[in-house]
Length: 353
Image (spheres, rainbow, N blue to C red):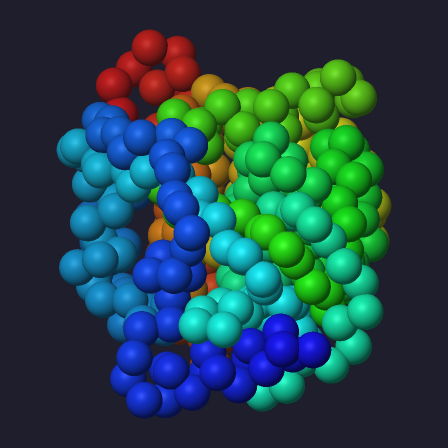
């Protein structure tokens, strides 16, 4: 019964300005993979593209975004495990008497109700962003699940997986206990944001599991349509871009019309993946050729190069074309996209970028 007060006491600490992070109140912590640094290549684009950028992903700056495009040395944080005792999961959020961890995309309670399930031991395989964005779920929560399973029975807070998420869990052989309310004698939380050696190994494990179940893609490249799905980033000439890519050997895929297995089959080891910046790109980015190139069509009013770090970790190239404003939406200069592809294909044939 006393654990049901955990949300109240831990949230009051936050309201009073007192620490209430799991890092401060874990019983112990240890390193799963040390911090590393790597040398990464520059993104591939035309310099004038950045002049068209007028807006950024929320809470980002031009410096933070543009610096990710540069070649240089990157520092990658360690993957750390934190052990907590006498915890409750309530409404999709995790609490001890002194700690609160926001996970689900809903209000945090002050009283833990419905916590009838009891686990003596568990490891958390969900993240706040992974529960909100499909792209983060693919690149954060799938590899997180692999790490969690090495420590304890893995539990997920994704209680209503989409058809695609359910399909990828099956394809990647990841059976997870799924729940939003429970009591834990012990639970391990993992800090896993760094693109370090262990993260790269887990990406490759996921890719290897897909290769074991599927044949390589017969397509030179794929374009993943976004349409009007998700947060608004409408490419007004998306279908024209798609038709321009068909003669170059691209398959045009509408993720909303295909299963996870069909998408994985079409994207597996493809040389190029093209699409509007967004979560639908994750279908291709995780499974394309490790020597391939992810090409993002960037809205000028919502510039975001999140996938650059993942590409660097796996070893893929990253390229972009920034669009032109078209009312509230944007369009892509198809000739500029062709020039970029010519440049990329030339580099494959031994010509300098």
